[in-house]
Length: 248
Ligand code: PGA
Image 1 (cartoon, protein in one colour):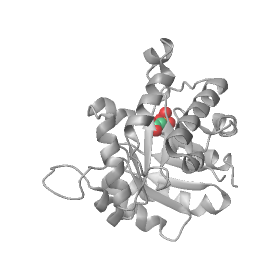
Image 2: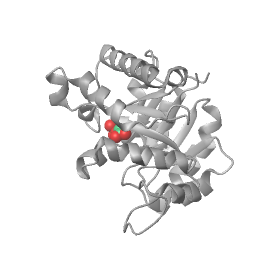
Image 3: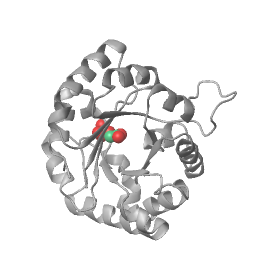
């Protein structure tokens, strides 16, 4: 299956820096046969959608509210993301779970709202270092999978991103065996929950993916692509990762 390379810009980028990055990506994207997605901050979403219109690169949000509109100061709704040109939205990123105390139930409600608005949810799961060291990584991720994904998730083409919290922005990555084992575990849980549709769900790996480790990570069984943070902010690095991805 064609892999998906998604860039999570987090709270980075101005109109000037985004325009330069997007035009470099747009120019080189035809040489990368994988699916590509950039997730800029909400302020840059419409600019990114315009800059990438007609290209092979999609645009996604980094979070959304669970309601389509209303009195929720500072929030952005899935309908608004769609209106700005997004096709996807990242939900339940560990930085949201940590900084904003987001719960699995909230992530699930957001995913439901995203699907209702016509967006593909990219739901992040992953254990902390302490949870891995105490042998609870699968229990934690399994719990997040069962509580964060709504019933219609797989049928709507939802994507899961496995991001060990301790690997995000640290330069550390799990071993190949650890990534393969966790992706296999997640696949099993998705197949149990969603049957045939769950067997086709893309499972991205995220956490310190860079051009130098992308080929190894992307070749592991059940790895359907990558969710890239820091390395998505430099066109050469993001494209280097995309060139390592499977195209069919
Ligand atoms: P990183 O972030 O690639 O900078 O580790 C990944 C993520 O948080 O999605």
